[in-house]
Every structure is written in C-alpha cells, then in structure tokens.
Image 1: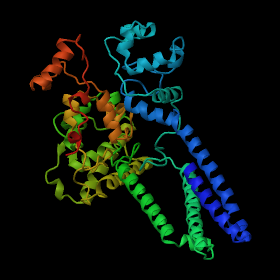
Image 2: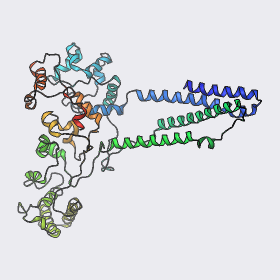
Image 3: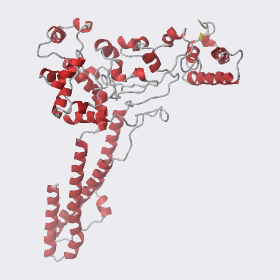
Image 4: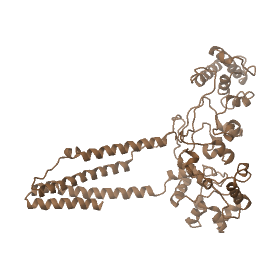
Length: 505
C-alpha cells in the first residue's frame, strides 16, 4: 500500500514540477490535488477495513462451535448439554474447571489420558467416574476452536436449521448481504481507478518532457481503455468462477434437508420407543456399500400382525398394504394384484378402513365422521402411491432420498459399520428421536477428514483385522497385546484413512 501511494505521489510531483516550469498551474490545481486526497483516504479506508475484518474473523464464534461440536462431540455428548450420555453432560463445563487454568481445559480436550497420567485432580476425578470409557483425543483443535465449542455449549439454543412447519422440502440457508466483501470490492475499485490516474499522470509526464500538451482523460475515457475493460472482464470471470465452484461444492450438501415422504414413517416410534435395531430394516448396511431402503416385505414382517399405528391408526399402514397387495381382511397376499383396477383397490381398502373405524369406535355402522375418515385416508393412498413414476397404486413405495454424495466420492457402509464399528448416530444424528428424518451432518470433505483424524481403529475383538497382513497385526499388538507401548492408540488416519485414493479413485 505504501509503495502504491509513493508511486502515485512521485509521478504526481514530477508532473507538477514540469508543469510549473511550463506555467500550467491551473491544470495542476484542478487535476492533481484532489487525487492526492482521494488516494490518502482510500489507503486509510482499505487499511481500516482489512484490520477490522481480520479481527472479526480471527476470534471464536458460536456458529463455528456448533459445527465443531457436531463433527467431534455429538457422538458421545447429548446435544441439550444437560443429559449424560456416553460422556457427561457438558453444560456448566466452565464452572467445573474454574479452579484450574484455562489451558488445563484445553489440554483435557486435546489429550485427556495425558492429563490423567499427569495426576491432574479434575482429570483423575472424571476418569474415576467414567472409566474405562476413554475420551477421544482432539490434538488438532486450536485454542480458538475449543473456545468456539465452549461458546456453543453455553448457549446451544437458536433457530433450527429447518422449520418443519414451513420449509419441509429444503433446508433454510442463512442469508444476508456480505458487506465485508462489498466493501473490499469498492475499495479495490477505487484503487483501480486511482491506478489508472497514475498511469495517466505518468503518460502526461512523458508528453510534457517531449514538449506536448498533457491530456486530461475523462472518467468515461478511462473506463473504456483496454486496461479497464480487461480488469472488468477479469473481475467478472473471477466472480463467476467463485460462484460456480461454491455452488458445486455445496451440491448435495443440504444439511438439515427434511423432505416429505410418501409414508409418515417415524424412526422415533420404531427405533426409539420400540427399540428396533437399525440394521434389522437397513440390513445391507453391514454387508454392502449401500444401506439401502428396506423393501416393503421387511415392513410386512411386523405389519402383517400390527395393522393399526399408535398415532396414525390405519392411515399410514394401509399405504403399505396397498402398495404390496396385501388384503388385511383375509390376511393374505392378493394373487394377480398387479392387474387389479384402481376401482377394485379402492373398494377393498375403503372397506378395510371403514371396518377398523367401526371397531375402534364401538359402532354398528359407519357414521358421517367415519365416512370422512375413509375418504381422507383413501385420498392419502392415491397421493402417496399413484402420483409416482409408474402412475398406479401397485408397486414399490418411492421414498425421497435424503443423504446424497457426489458421484466422484466412494463411501462404503459395511466398511464403517462392520469393520469400523461406527454407530449410525455418528453420521445420521439421534435418529431414534426423529419423527421426520433430516440430514444431520454436512457430509463434506472436511467433516469426513476430521472424523478419520479423530476416530480410533477398533482392533479388539474385530475379526476383520486379525486375518490381515503383518502391518495390521503390528497395530493390533500395540493396541491390545501391548497397551504400554509408545502407540497405544491407532487412528484411521494412521492406516491410510486420509489417502486420496480411499475415497476418490
């Protein structure tokens, strides 16, 4: 910045001296003195803007803390900060560590076992309460990142990513005017303008030396020069390129995406209240690349007997029967169901819905309210099942995919579930508490790398590693047979978890 100003002032002073010798003072006073003041103001504004933006961006923030908590802490600590989970409730962590230096808390987060080994009173107290569960080490976190996490722990509230009542189809994104970048763009534009005037002054110095009249270009003439046009074209290419890359990076990374599904399936009821294991329905997660959506036959394993839901009654379960061709009145699958007309299907399931309504309300005949229920539920069946790709009631239920990775990314569920022993909640959040599933994690590259850097390899009682080569056996021995060795923990990154070819090939 100083060099730029010095260049301008030297050129301006040189031109001024030459003009004075040629008695051209009016031109000098009109054209050069205001530019000096303009340049000085631009320098001050630019310096102030850079200093302020650096100060604002450098410190810890609650928003950064939320992302860090989700990526590093949420798998073991409850998000309400009040309930004990695998680890203790984190609310009030500052008060509990208030008797010790702040750096002790940083050390605990980065390597709890090292602090325990040093005999730290608070660390040994926590270890006595929660052993043998070992807290993951986060050696890569900076002081500012830990402070950001603490800020989020102290105030985890705020607006949810998605308001299910208003935007169930997509995640809400934070919006606002990026004043910092607009300010920087304006300052750079002014600097570019000043630079053009510098070039013009230097050209006038050369003209005066050659005995020619100096030329004072208007703003329009300056902006129409080749240099100005090249600058604007470059700026447009830069902005367009940035937006293209930014949108490409965010493609498919709709954190909080919560679409409406054809059937109101509640994971909270199935996985939470009824404790159905995730892999009972998503059984391919342990043996395949894809977790896959369960076939309707899997639903029928239970719902051939359970014909009415706790909350929705026959409304949602009847959609399962209508899609697969199951007659709940006779408890049999319908032969030739694919050739049935919609009228036949309507008669069967309206009769079934009406009969269940009469039984549930201890009636002898269908009343007006019951007739309304029958019509409403049938309309729901038509909307959920007919308005899809095959255009008819019969056929597979077309669930809306939520979690989506780009084509150039390789991810294998069985590798993580069966070998890595990773819980579903690590990536999908507290699925057992969700009535409507949403995308919990960012599924971004940084999120995956952070997990690979901080997740321990589970060698103990893991037949996958025991059958492999000497390198794996060496790690296995260090982890299990010789825990006193110099490497008592092995992280995914230690066995190639950060190699590009693992996910991109």
